[in-house]
Length: 351
Image 1 (cartoon, rainbow, N blue to C red):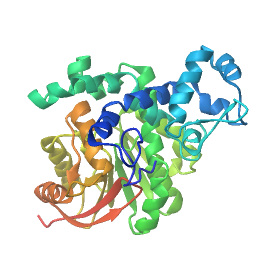
Image 2: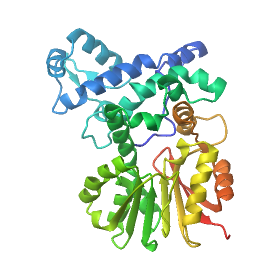
Image 3: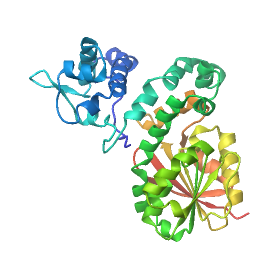
Image 4: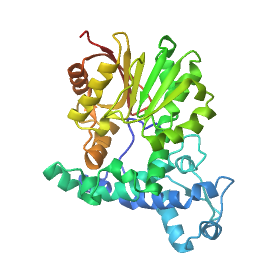
């Protein structure tokens, strides 16, 4: 999933909107977000994959009330998601196309994850987080996010699918940025269903991989790795990167894991990696890096999701540099990747 750095926030307005109108547009973003989420849940984009259809036809297919469905379509259309044709039928726009389950750049599960259910509810408790430091998700649901995922099968499916959507296009780009052929064994910590590791191994047939994930997620990785044709080159290790890191890797991959943790927990994970890594190993951390200044950047907003959901945080380059150094790594360079991601490449410091 690509998030362009210049993406607008809030509802679109005219160039001469006064400040109070622009502020209201930000506060009222739910007026667009929730209709889009409902249309995503109903699978309207999939129903339009073969061409425009009437509201009555869509409502019958989606088991929806026609008038309410039309109003949600109209609201979504005014922000560029779906469009009404001159003959009254409704069709896809480029943004609406991304809500299809088989879209080239799918984002349906991200929309559902952020706008419905547990993660939407947690934002109602954000003020408590700011006052007390306690996770808004835990305040809203009585349990941390990852413990909640183990109990809610439906939401866990949406969450894991969203994480897969975020990973899909990154493997090819990372393989173009770094010559992984020089690393015999790649260890992916918290690598989900193996999309990133599998994509890299598909590009580098002489490499082998180790995937560390929670036992239930490991089972999701088996079919994905088989689909990529690399299952015979991957050792699956049920576990948790906060507790154990396999030794002997030539390169360690940590994608969108450390931003889920506070500095103390992230530092503990990095120290475990340093203890497991040999002197010539490399560490690749894939995260959004917060730039300086007041300009727009997705990392500054994703940081609020981390604040609300699991006591995590996005970090600046200097914060990453300091955290890595404390763990025994030297940050060598930061490479831009699929927005808003960056790849931080680090090497072990001499002991």
